[in-house]
Length: 612
Image 1 (cartoon, rainbow, N blue to C red):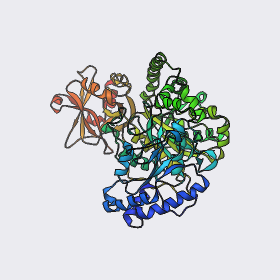
Image 2 (cartoon, rainbow, N blue to C red):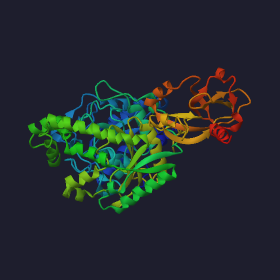
Image 3 (tube, rainbow, N blue to C red):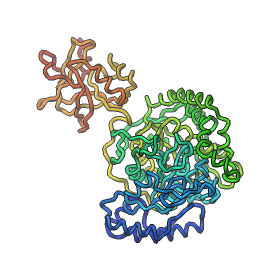
C-alpha cells in the first residue's frame, strides 16, 4: 500500500529522530490518523487504542530524555490483548473476562522504559486458542495483503498492525505457532524465542509451561533490537530463565556462516494441502539457502509430528483447562464456541495420562534432539497453505489443525524458531519458512533468517517500502550454535587414529585450513599413536595444514581433560586472521624431536614415512 507516512522501520525512525526531521510528538498524530483510516477498511485489528492525548504526552516526555539515552526512543509498538498494560483493560478477546491491569507486564515495562511508545492492544483468537484469527467476538482482522484471507492467529491483530505499517513492531504470544503463522501470512519476521527467554509475567496463560512472548517485526534486525531489551528472567515468572553469554543476546547479528547444514523434511512428510504455490515456495527457499552455502539433508519428521500431536490430542489440552476452565464453567454464556469446545476437551485428562505423555515426550525428545549431531537447524514451511476467512469459518477445526502441522512441536521440544518471509501463495497471502534450532540459538537464527529474507527481495510487510538497510554485522562464527570450533593438526584429523575421539562426542568436520605462517611442526613418533606438536614461533615459521571441527560446548571440557602432555589446547591463528581453539605443544618438549615444518602438515609427513 502506498503511503507518505514516515517509514516505521526502527533504523529509519532513529535516523529521522537523530537528524531532527521528525520527533515522536510529531509522529503520534500522523500515526493515529493512519490507524483511524485503516480501521475504516478493517475495524478488527485493535481491541483497545490508548487515547491520543496520553500517547502524545508520553512522546513529549521522551524528548526531555533525548534519543541518545533510550535504545527504543519513540518507536511505536502494539501488544496482543492477553498481555497486561497498566491502567488498560485486558480482555483476551473475551468481554466477560475483562479486567483492568494494575501494572505493565514485565516485557511491556522493559520496552516502555527503553523509550518505546505503546499505541494499543490488538485482537486475537480468544484466549490465544487458534492459529487463524477468526475466533474473536471483536471480529476477524484481515490479512493486509489480501483482506479475503485470514491474518493468521492467535496473534492476528499484532501481525496485521505491523504489516499494515501502523506500528514498528508488536508483541504476540506463541504456544503452538501463534507468533509464526501470522508472521508468515502477513509477510513479517516472527521470532518465537527460546521458551522463558522473554518473561511471561503479566500474560494471560494458555499453556503456562509452554507459552512464549513473541515478536513481530519488519526485519530480523528490528526483532533483534526488541529482543535485546525484552529478554531476561523476571521473578514473577518461574519459567523464565537467563540466556548464556555465548548466545549473544544484545550483540550485533553475525554474517551468515559460509557453510551450514540444514534438515529438510522428506517428501513423505511434507504437507501443502493441495497448495501448489506453497509447495513451489518451499522448494525455492531450499534452493536459495543452498545458494547461500547451505547443505540440505533430508530428515524423517515422524518423531516431530508425533510430538506435535501430544499438544492437542494429549493431556496438554488440560493446561488450557487449568488456565481458563474455571472461568468458562462459571460463565456458561461466555467464550467462543470453538474455544470452549477445545478447553472443555481437557477435562477428562487424568494424572496418569499426563505422566504417560511426559514419558513419551522425553522419548521423542531424544529422537528429535539427535538431529543436532549433524544439523545446524531444521527448515520447514511455516504453514502449508492459507485460507480465506469464509473457508475458515465453514470448517474451523480441521483447517486450523492444518495450519499447525509444522509448528505444534517446537515449544514442547524447547526449541527456538523464526518465521521468515520468502514469497506468496494462493490469493497473495504471504508464504514463509521457519528456522528451528535448539534453545538459545535465537541471535544465530536471526542472522541466517536475515540473509534469506533479503535474498527474497520482498517489501516490508504489506507496504511498498523496501526492507530497511541491514545493521553492521560481526564476522560469521566458525562453529554452529552451542558448539566450539577446534583446530586439529595430527592424529585427530579425518581418517586418522584419534578422529573417533571427536566423532564420539558428536564432533563435526567443518573445513580444511592452514595456520598463519608463524608455527613450527614437530613429529612425536614415540607417542602411541604418533602425532605432531605445533609450536608458535616469533620468526622463521610456516603455514601448517589443519582441519577445523566443531564439538558440543558441553563436551568440550571433557575432551580437553583427556589430552595428555606435552600437548594441550590453546589459541591458533589461522591464515585468514581468525583465531580458534586448537592443539599446541609445550615448547620445552621439542628438544631432540624431528622438525617437519617444511612438509607443511602431518598428512604430508605420513606420506613420506609410508614411502620409505
